[in-house]
Image 1: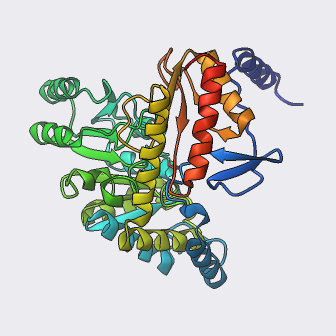
Image 2: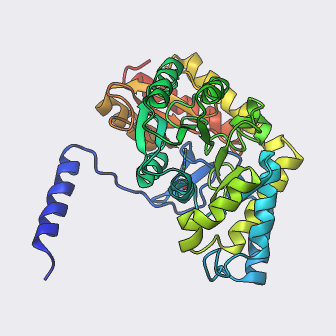
Image 3: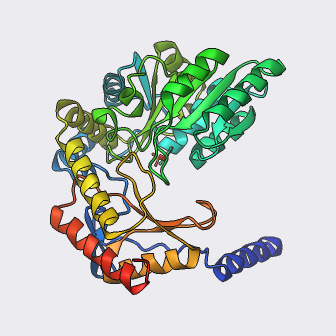
Length: 396
Ligand SMILES: *Cc1c(COP(=O)(O)O)cnc(C)c1O
């Protein structure tokens, strides 16, 4: 007999979501997650992946993954601290430190896992964390797990951050204080004000933690948002993911040697969850080699992003104030935004709508992620579909 309490909870919860139009139906891809994708037999221009540089399908990464898999198997066989640390993991961590201009780095199985482990390895119930209100869900959960007091500051509002940092410091209630921010915010594509954040951190002795999941490979010639501002030796924790621009899977912290040494004995996903597969680790190494040897893909990404942004803007769409390739097309009202995204889909463009509660009410948007792998023809074709749908729905 299944639990009736659970049955009732699940049934009512699902019905509730469905009646509000909030139940997400997932369409599986019948192709790789490239610049075009196939869903239900139809080819679509893909503007929804985080595969910024097209590396997810790069032949060089595939080759590295296959070779490492043949050599070391499909699974690492244990957690890092037992005997799941293979030579390829150590090489990846050395490469990450080089990429991020830090003394050392530690790799995790995902960016999400990394935030689960890294924050609570350092912060506890005697501490407080100042967190941007628009920080990623994994940061929020990582903060909760630490049991530190969470103090939210208004999005990128440096006066609010300074005020709250001062209050927290003056209260004398906390031992350690940390400030945490995304490097690039994923909904609007805006960049954290890192120079000001670092100045405030200096003033109030805050530990600094920057999650640059959307910035690595994208900002600062590829090295990320922290490098973009020339602050590589000023940020304590530089977090990144290996699942977005790097094209594979995994996450990491780059920082001082002692910080990394500490995380290797205290970050729970490192101690209690099996390490990255050898193939994934090898593919990441190849991706980092590519990024460090040439800015070609990075430059192509930006050229495509600028071209697409200008195209949408020239058509008359509101594209917000992105400072990264993330290109929101702000439609406004929730139902209209969803209808817009659906019509794009019907016409051959895959670009997901993002509405309340993920973004504030009335700021529903279709979020576009142009990548280095798109051709000009694909972008032109997407723009003409945008124009058609914009006119059909009287947005233009
Ligand atoms: C995507 C993202 C993550 C999660 O990374 P995964 O490697 O996909 O788990 C973590 N933090 C931020 C800021 C992100 O945007």
